[in-house]
View 1 (tube, rainbow, N blue to C red):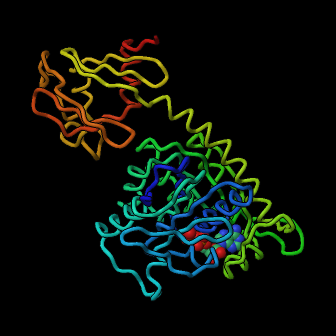
View 2 (view 1 turned 45 degrees about the vertical axis):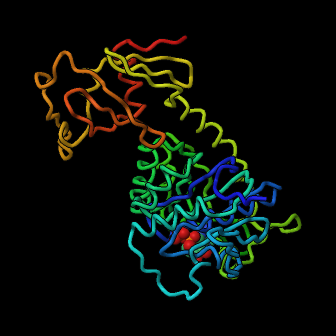
View 3 (view 1 turned 135 degrees about the horizontal axis):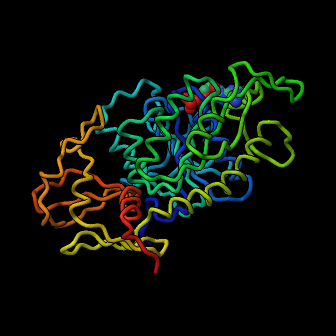
Length: 366
Ligand code: ADP
């Protein structure tokens, strides 16, 4: 029997990202995974934070995954299959690898792990918006992304960049989790705001995405995370576990909504003719956009000044007879277009193409 690896049998891959480190992204990823597993879901957790992997500690398992040739068999703990760079590098020493190799390692985690059938795979991203995050966003067929921030303005301002990255690559944003939203009294459920208020809510509001949860600093969560003892069971009645069980319900609901919204800009078929582009959208509508309008709206650095946003390309520079010669998909969010004037460096987002055709009145429903 051949051993299947990769992500084909995973129903939903969710990335957990943040702008800054130390805001609780790994805590959210681990506890959300365990909360879903406690409800009987098949769950995986991929610690893609190559430079600061902390899942082995939080999951409470330092057992190295079994390898079989190029195949990695995930470790299973509390019903969660998990793989972490921390388990591949048991020396505990700092991992010094350059970005291209780090990207290769992440790709290996996607294609070479025997994940099997899963309802959810959570990916704990490294903080920030660099190459690893972008590779995952483009290659992991993400069903959605969750952004974790703390309430301080400085953290929320950086988290905004994470949201913008996912928006750019058309990954549905499930919502924002505000962590360390005050301090929870160890003896009762009183919460005192120690880091200010409202950073997560403002962030969610400005992107028109839901605020999924506000989790206070909870000494019990800290102690359990440090000892790897965040085991979810019916006979435990801890405050943080209740919060994560609630969060899992909200995530499930909001993921469906976010995917519905993202469908607005998903395509069924794109064809090219002498006039320009014809796009059949997943929602049943169709667009016809003429080649010259598209060429004139090219967003590449030689057509638009990257700093000022001012148009460099002039209308008189584009022939009335310009044609689209071909298109190439870019991730799930757009296409690169080759024009008859030899230009082909612009990436056209589906969202922009759909809005363009609506603006020119060349969009219709069938
Ligand atoms: P990140 O993944 O964003 O770097 P972590 O999840 O590793 O952050 O969290 C950083 C530290 O803060 C860890 O020691 C973690 O246990 C602790 N922590 C995170 N969230 C909370 C919380 N709500 N209450 C108490 N401790 C927390």
